[in-house]
Amino acid sequence: MRCFHVTVVCVVVALGVGVLPLSLDAQLDPSFYKNTCPKVHSIVRQVITNVSQKDPRMLASLGCDASILLNNTATIVSEQQAFPNNNSIRGLDVVNQIKTAVENACPGVVSCADILTLAAEISSVLAGGPDWKVPLGRRDSLTANRTLANQNLPAPFFNLTQLKAAFAVQGLNATDLVALSGAHTFGRSHCAFFTDRLYNFSGTGKPDPTLDTTYLQQLQKTCPNGGPNNLANFDPTTPDKFDKNYYSNLQVKKGLLQSDQELFSTAGADTISIVNKFSSDQNAFFDSFVASMIRMGNIGVLTGTKGEIRKQCNFVNTKSAELDISSVASKESSKEASVSSI
Image: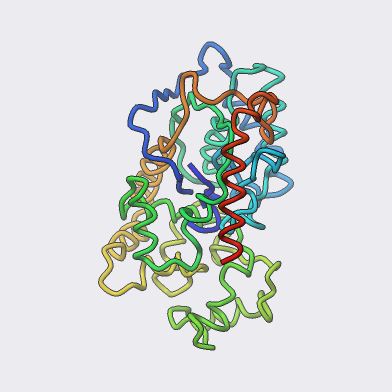
């Protein structure tokens, strides 16, 4: 799974959508580390708790695919600079803190992918959201794919048709789309991701008509002249709490991103009834969110002997591993050069 927060996400949550085919035989199990690292959940929780006490925003910044952790190297083109992820990936140092703590207890056992998946669940709980038994047993990828991240991750300016198409490729439906978008119940976004809505929506030279006028004025103060590096709360009512207010905001035209408001303001859309249901019933939202998170967590995972257990989350383990994927990275760079020249 990919970072869900800015576009839909990083969530994820934050938290996102994967670019690999849906894995139907992921062989994941919540008790995977029962014997090899029984305290992994408590270790991850302790680090996140300590960090979030100093920076509550961090809870909305954890929970991405381990491929996004890989830094640029001679053979890897990092996904961190992909458009949907650029300037939106926080918490990488926290992931490394968690990895260090886990390695101290259980060296070479727990993958960065599983650490991130646990972090997503723990962050939800610490922010007042639902808990769930996280299926575990993922292994870490040996490479990244920025081109696919650019092509397949839904953008903050997507309309509903585009959003549904991006989710459908991953085997996710309209309920998954609305439920996972609910990760924007907490966290922040850079103004750059919604500036057009404030000043020049769809090239009209006017604001997005689906924005509440009072909310529009508030956002224009937060993002004067675009203010691309400024931050705005996804939820103007309870910005650090995981609750159903995200959906109530959509009902009164206070969705921050276009991709948020599209769920409710697209005439005749089947997502409207889902937004209404979640707005009136927080338990229904939580239940659907958990089901969708587990479903999303099964997308394109590596298990068994595939991939590896990284020693450091930002790098593959060995030079030989990098040599094995050097041809893939080379092709990736060539693709990006072609795209940038168009």
